[in-house]
Length: 89
View 1 (spheres, rainbow, N blue to C red):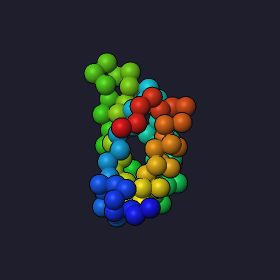
View 2 (cartoon, rainbow, N blue to C red):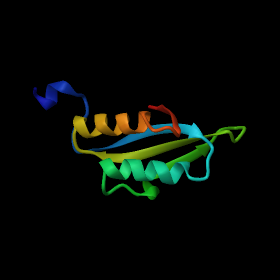
View 3 (cartoon, rainbow, N blue to C red):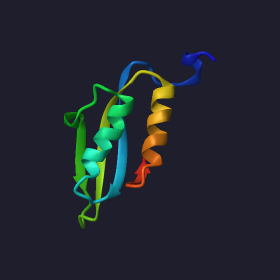
View 4 (cartoon, helix red, strand yellow):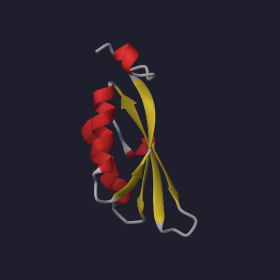
């Protein structure tokens, strides 16, 4: 399968992923740990945080260094299946 025809993303590139979950003290740190398993150079400085208007949820935008579609697919699967995560975009 030709990687160029399989995706519109050029690799390597910075790729933002939005992760939402319930407000919890360890949510952001947990997400950093999950993302770092797939992008070892990722750090908390590459993540923006926004609480919901009522403070019940936290939205994180993690900008990862995408090196392949397989890497992104694996990261999406890991985030989507994590019990603290409600939505991944």
